[in-house]
Image (cartoon, rainbow, N blue to C red; front, side, top):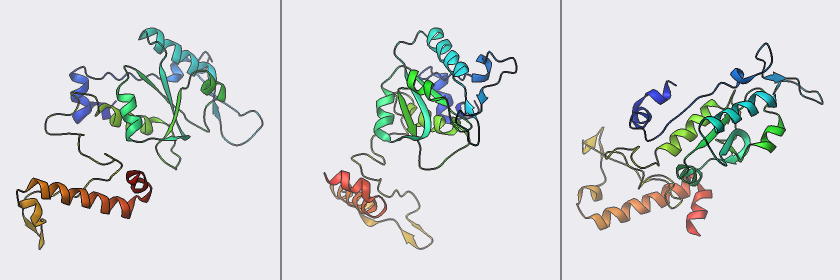
Length: 217
């Protein structure tokens, strides 16, 4: 909630460009103690989220919002690693449901029944899916027309054409004996574009050889 009440996300919600609804799976548990987890069949450490509360939450969401054939994203380290093209794809949709796991994971039958996409934000494990969900919401929302203001833009930024972004400079011209590259002060836009492109290639080759290979195809 607090993240959605800040800055660009807050403005997007206020302008009714995006709507974010949060559902507590525990509220849909039929267990008298509102329990949502149980011991894994086959043994092992940890607990697994049970299917009933998740499925009933899902049913409530699609019925309340009249969603047909929803995309349901389960945030998991086993998923496809999130990237800009996935964000672009989701930004075209009217509705996306994010399922945040906890404990050792969720019952596989939920994945089989309702999940359409399994997405990871990287090769590490978190305590739950809330932070990854926020990352997806942010990366997707900013690509929706009207979310970013005139002073912000996603047209020329990292991962465009599989290249990392070139360095940025602003005033003053000199700081701690470091000067802004003279080409950026020249006013010659052809030379500036060339310099920026070359810097993008250099940075991508050095830091992300995997992306550089894609850019060269």
